[in-house]
Image (cartoon, rainbow, N blue to C red; front, side, top):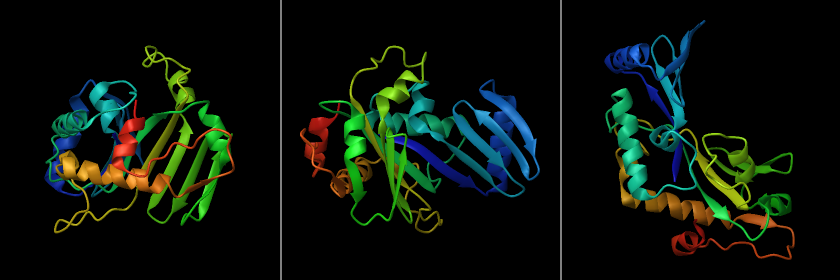
Length: 236
């Protein structure tokens, strides 16, 4: 499921167009000046304006649905990207600087059991633990993030009131940072993220990096995610 993106805009005419949209939309809240420009909340997006650039950050899926979600499939991802681009008048050729994507996994017991058992990830230097309910593994431009999604759902009421709070969901997502945004050869664009082949590559990366996590011995099985096929067998 594609989630959060960060996009940096430097084209003056596009910046002007986006400012016009957020300045007149009823989806815009908390528009305020800053020493370097302005900040605004547009639906669930944060838009930061500076003298010669504009940065947009937020969840494509949440913008498309208006609420938190269990998971989104490829067709939904494509629609959410299209809606995101149309909302702000963004060309689909727009490069994506940072990308976050992941899935929610139904586990045989509380996600906290798995989080507490995660010791390290091969090739990742930094480990961060937050109250035994979240664990992050980081290196230069890629972060692995694990957390208890049940807690996230329960803290997001009422928009997720239709989702049970005892699903034993482990959320696992990847953040790709500082991707190539050159006009000649961007790593990702809004258009490329709509392609099945690109989404399949992201899924394969997601599953492959999971297998780098090293657990303390557990009396319950660690969900194997060595391939996209194995991954899909564990999606809810």
